[in-house]
Length: 118
Image (tube, rainbow, N blue to C red; front, side):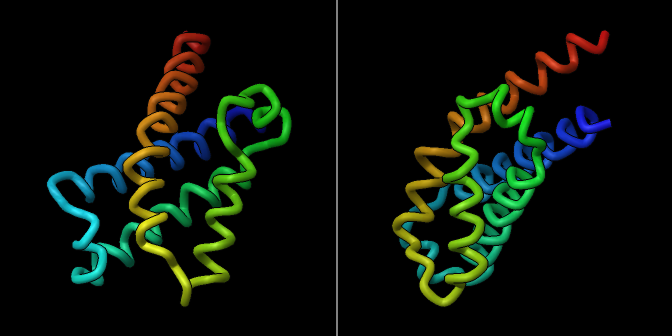
C-alpha cells in the first residue's frame, strides 16, 4: 500500500533529521571544519532525508504542502552531485533553522496517521 510506504519514508525523514540535530547538540559551526566524521555524517543524514522525500508519493506530497519537498530533494541532489563543493555554512544553517520545523511537522503528520489507524 502506498500509504504504508509513505509512512515508512516519512519516518526515515524524521529519524535522520532528528539524528542530524542530535549530532550538532553542544557543537559549533566551526566543528564542521575540524571534525571530518561530523561533516561526513551530517551530509549523509541530510542526503537520506532528501532521498526519502523524493520517494514519498505525489498524492502524499500534495496533501502536505507545508513540507518543502522540492527544496529537500534539491538539497539531496546538491549534496550528492556537488559533493566537492558543500558549503558548511549553509549546511549548518539548514540543520539549525530548517530541521526543527521539519521535525515538528513530520512528528505531527506521523502522530496524526497513528491516531487514524487506531
